[in-house]
Length: 86
Image (cartoon, rainbow, N blue to C red; front, side, top):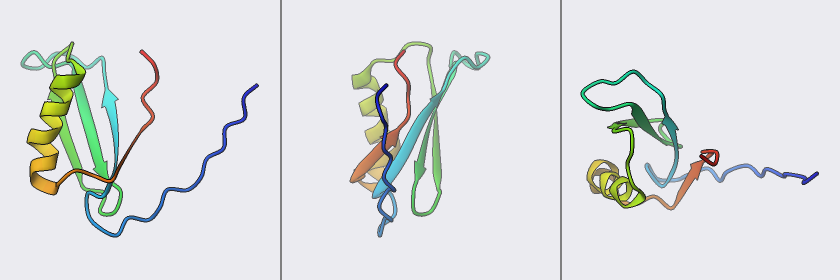
């Protein structure tokens, strides 16, 4: 058995410096979208939601991140995700 040690995340000093992200999948289709991408700022708890189509590539996700988050808040120092392997 592999031991897993968790250390606390540093307290951010700037908004959108450290974020968390996750995906909500398997939703009923709405305008062709079946998933939601959730991004949360660790300092303010401000949230961005992006509706996603059933299949989206990593380059498309990166482009969407730039359009929806980075252009408004800059690129974060760290991103935490607990997304399991698909």
